[in-house]
Image (cartoon, rainbow, N blue to C red; front, side, top):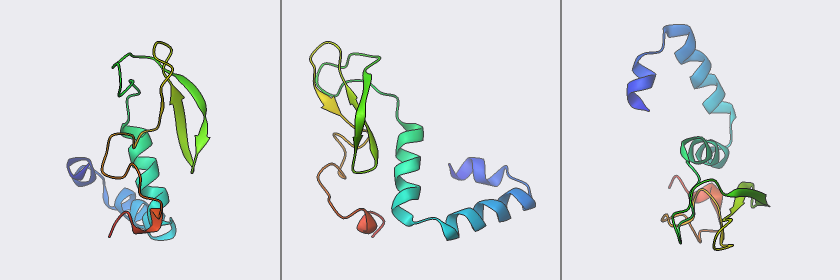
Length: 89
């Protein structure tokens, strides 16, 4: 991500700074996680799960093979943290 920021021109950097200063920190983290997430089941590693609603603002998925449900933060240190506003602390 840092590499991509260095490739932006001055106007784009100012737009990004403005966007990030207005956005809630947890929303920025959620967007980053979901944008960089390639859904595959954390249990059986099957590809192409189905969308299965939302949970706490995150897209939830369901594996077609083992029926396990998960989000972009499943299996990460953020998995059971309930206070999104503290994710960046």
